[in-house]
Length: 134
Image (cartoon, rainbow, N blue to C red; front, side, top):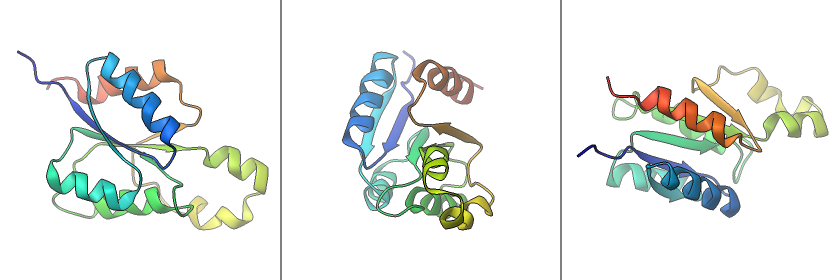
């Protein structure tokens, strides 16, 4: 029997969390949910998932971004694949780039970035590529 890949979805938007849970479970993934960075850290300590889907902007504009950096700089979690979700580009277009310069000037701490609203077909293809058996 094949082990289901487990994904931790971290987003402060309940609708995003719930819709991703439905989509992912329908496609055979195990899913755990967290509302913020603190809950995500607790979930990680309980059990490390195979992949994390992490919203960039939660209680602060960089909460997810900061958590991803923290994880990538930790020996325990440095190899955890992280997909960042953001409506950042839309927010930059709406509010202008000045207040986001601290993010724009940084190197992103994850290889994959998906803009909201999420294209679920594209996300599932990406997950399949990242989590394919070695």
